[in-house]
Each structure stands twice: as C-alpha cells, then as structure tokens.
Image 1 (tube, helix red, strand yellow):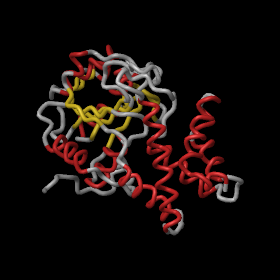
Image 2 (cartoon, rainbow, N blue to C red):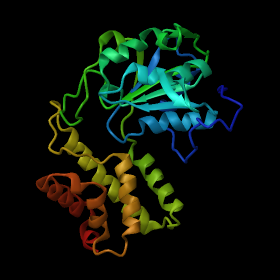
Image 3 (cartoon, helix red, strand yellow):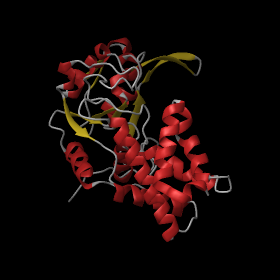
Length: 302
C-alpha cells in the first residue's frame, strides 16, 4: 500500500516518533482519510486514555506530516485558532494561529477534546472543512486558500451528543450541522494481547527482563484493568458501579510505578494507589483493591 507523506524530516511541527502498536482497522481508516477526505473531517471518539491522539500523532510522525495540535476548552474561541495581533520585536504584528498555519501549509489540525468547546465557535469551521478559503478580516481581509494536504481531525470522549454518563465534566452537545461534516471512528481500549505487548515494551524500555514471572504479573494487571473497565461501563443503561476507570495510559503508569516502587511493601498496591485509586472515593478504592487482591492472590501482599 502506497501512502503519501512529506520529504522534510526536520519540520518542528512533526510529532516525535515513539514506539506504538497500531491496530490494523484504525490504521486503515486514518490512512484512508488523510489520503482523500472527500470534503470530510475526522472525529475520533472513545474513553479517556484509549490512544485517540497518540494514533494520529504516531501516524503523522511516520509520514513526516506536521501537526498543529490544540486542546479545546470552554473559553477557546475561533479567533484563538485563526490568530491575533501580538507584540513582535517592538511592534504589533499579526501572528497566525494553528488553524491558519494548517490551512496554509497543509498540516493536520488536531482538535483534542473538541466536545469541551462552545459549539457556536466551532460552527466557524464549517466552510473551512468543506474546502472554502479562510478569510481573516482582522488581518486586512487576508485570504488563505486551503493547501491540498490540509486535514481537520478531532478527538472527544463523547460523540458530540453530550456526556450521558456524567463523568466527563464540561462536555457539551455539539451542533448537528457541524457534526454532519465528520466521518466517525470509535477507539476503544486495546484487547489483552495488544496491551500485553505494550506493557512488555514498557518493561524492556526500563531494562526489566520480561521473564515468565513478569509476563504472569502483567497478564494479571491487564485482567484487573478489564474488570475495572467492566464495572465503569456498567450495563445496557450505562450506569456503572465505578466512577474511575483504568485506561491504557493508566495501566502503563501502574507498570512504571510498580517497577519504580518495587522495594516498597506490597509494591503492587502501593503503585496502584498512586496510578489510579487515590483519586477514587474511599469505598471505590477499597473495591478496586479487593478486585486486585482476588486476581493476584498471594502475590498481592508481597
């Protein structure tokens, strides 16, 4: 499969390349989008820490594709994305923002946590997504024609319809006309085989030999993570028993801390507290540790 990229390997906006295990279906969908968006933007939805942003950035890193990345919030305005006048070398000059740079130079514009942003501000992106020029009235009516490689990619914990669980504070329901301009991808947590490979790579990177004992340990850590996720998601009505979950990001943190605190009494419990459960309610913290104790058995108290 031939995939287009950029020759320049030194552009400062190219994400740093890191070890990453791609899932074929996700890689296929993103590559198909950046090859030809057909007038769409791309929206990646999924639970926290499932690797939505990492997926885009690691694909871009391997294609030398510069990325303009913005984390959205409730006070972010469209003008912050376009640019503003700033004091430069003693005089006021217009400084182009991430949207203007991406449109002009053919970068990926990645809007993280897009469902935290005011939908009335995001509506200003409608024409840009459809390929219309970006007009900047505050800079003398400057007109920027979209570069053929310009792409808009958004990530969010919701799919734009608001947070039904009540666990992601600040998430807003987005405008239907805006959402209609996106193709959707759902990024869930990796399966156990993939997560085991991720944890093994973390251990190797820390200089820890991955022997049979360590493999058994990481398998049980993944088992604990999946049980926490099951209780977080809950049943068909979406009412989970836990208000915290163990993302892949948190699972990696638990592994790192478990090695760092290996001399602590009960290093598994000590590191789990610092990776996740100290931000859970006391009753939920106790329940999670009970789950871990059941999974690890006698190894839990070592």
